Image 1 (cartoon, rainbow, N blue to C red):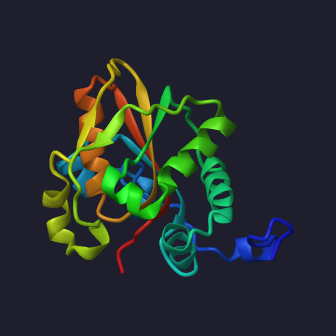
Image 2 (cartoon, rainbow, N blue to C red):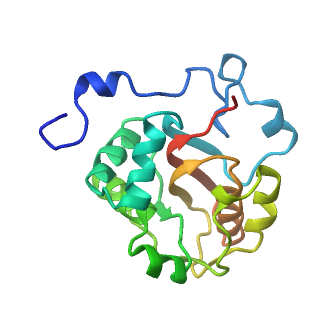
Image 3 (cartoon, rainbow, N blue to C red):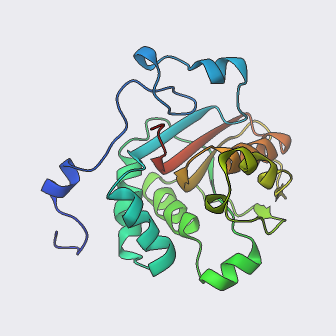
Length: 205
């Protein structure tokens, strides 16, 4: 345990991180870090992914502790770990939106808290221009094949982002369905490039 009540340097060294060779677009393992076959064949709406960790123990439990047990002291440490992996800046940051009903139930949006910290540290404006217009079922409760359908037309954007590089901040990328749909919405609003900045990436077993 460190002085800030989170984790110490020795624990940090043992946390699961992405292997060096991963696709620059979706962050899944790829040969020599080249673009993977899936992203070559079906390019997603987002252009690049940065992930601080692999979604495995104990990162999975720590992220769940933030979302469901309000252990918000972890937020800044997660954000700082993400910042350490970001090499290219952006014109603005968009936090993965929660539907107002879900936000009222939880009381906070962990992605908004992460995005605020990242934006402050990197001096990038936080853009509160996107809304979740449908109260979709939690992605974690659905089979992977159902997640794309669940997120269709789930977001709206109220700003003109023509020519902008926008970074989406979220806690976990699993299938990428949520980030894909939000990135599509941002591209429709004129964004030239969309990056995904996530705390953890779920890897294939």
